[in-house]
Amino acid sequence: MGLAIDPDQTFEFPLTGKQTVLVFRFLTAREWLQVSRMFDESFTIEDNAKALEKMLEAIKAPLVDWQIEGKPYDPSELDNVLTYADAVELRHNLLAKMTIEEHDRKNSVRQLQSASQSSVATATTGSMTAGTQQAKP
Image (cartoon, rainbow, N blue to C red):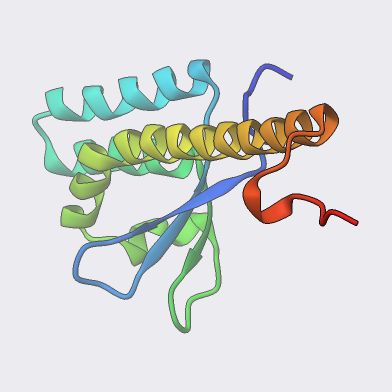
């Protein structure tokens, strides 16, 4: 598989000033480009209603769930959940947050692997620290 992380992994995007949390999946490079192009296109559309439709289309692509009290997840209801300002916030921040989240997770995994490999190397070489030295008979 080409993705460095599990494609089923998700991350949360809490909307500013709301108790609304949207849950997104990570995108492949191709999908990321498609969503990025949809957001870019929304900037060029003069009709705000049509621009909003394009933003919602881009947001729906990676959206997999939401945490909103009293509103079960239904992506067809996204336009009843978000405001225009929410859509603009996501247009400006969603892909950046996704990239940062993926980067942080990859670094976290690397650190765990490095620590694990270091522990294995120490164990196999018989190296002991002062706190683990064997008592003399």
